[in-house]
Image (cartoon, rainbow over all chains, first blue to last red; front, side):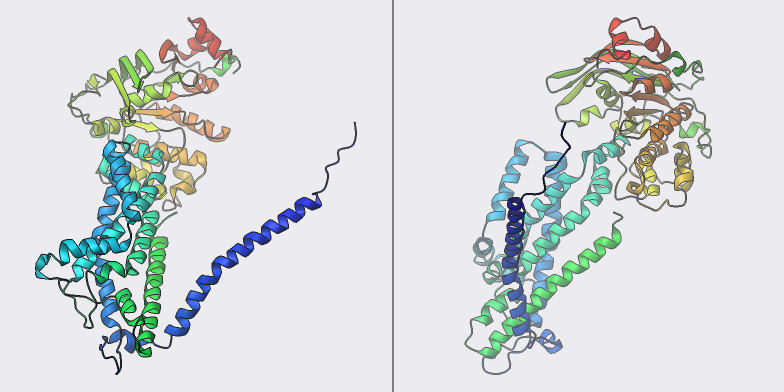
Length: 290
Length: 295
């Protein structure tokens, strides 16, 4: 019997390992380049325009004079996205609960899942057009363009995102927990409210944040529904300004000050989404045990 | 499995079931009213109820997994269900507290009686049945979002009752866990070791003050020391509840059960005093199984 001899790693395999490591590192860098460039340009172009005045004055609409700030757009985005969230999140989470806890494998549940998948793939401009035709042209509510119609378009856009992500995390809640709760004699609604939802909460919050970030940056659904105006308003039956619509309008103008304003608005929008994400993470961390 | 040595078998005769007040037909009345509420610690003694199966049949879709089973689990005793995998042991216990029907496509026939009360009676709330018949699962499953205290209180809170500190402490003492966790009641329940988690789950089941506790292989995921603690606990718990325990471990059945039922392919092969099942079974299949010739 010969002595045990395990050969060293072959030179070929070591080479292959080095090449593979180098390759994935390179790909990571390639992916990072546009991200870094976006942030760099945003900061470079936008930092000079933002400031307290920029955030607290309405746009003037003046082409030659001072363009003013973006207050109406910030507030408009908050109002419209907030309204859309307030409707889309409860409905979306409700649909997900129904799919996971009650509908399960029924034919209707499969149909619902299919439609949600289709809705996820619908381009946002289609939601805008849909609302334009059904609510804006028809003058529903006695107005043509209105903030709440923009919210409807955004809500339609958010609904499938919220539902799909909530369904996935609800499915991840182990069945053993449901069993444990049922075996204690808990009625179904209590099992869902006290055991399933709290366990899935971090994941649901993440899905909601994704949906909010997506909706906050959408331009197309708002152009046809809420339009672009200068003045701040809180009447949701009026036209309302929004950051993406303002960026879209200003960036095409042959006036440097307006283009500059668009950069500032873009930076503000990114910062708002970032702050929201961080806030949610902090609240989540504080309230969760695990 | 080797032939269990005779001295590994419990020799003491199970106590005769104490006198019980008859059950009112509906709803299932918690016994809480019948006993002093402060007296829920480990030493608690209370008459429990018998569980009687009459021609119980259960299916998963087309698969007939429990066949015409008739069996009585005596009050304040531990009865073990043994048998190879797929013999229907777990299905039997899941039929007792009506958890079986939660599985899509599963159904059952026959009667399950808690004393004289048919738990499948149309008029009876399934929720009340599960409050009276608690369950402990194979894998410890404390609620991950809740503290140790919250897990025990969950049994009460999930069934729309207030949880008092006395009840939580009593349940934790009853599960032999109080001394280990009393200084960290607000820590997450999933931070405990596997054996402690399982005892936490037992405490959670005890907190709702059940008549019967069903244990579906409660120690199969645990180390030997934790297993021993669970077995000692079964001995304690018999004083206040009726215990039905599914186990793969024949020595465990021999150590803790007063009576043992051997199931094979969904049919009851033999049922009797544990000592008899393990030393002098009537059926040759029982003997082959308990001596480790198959299964």
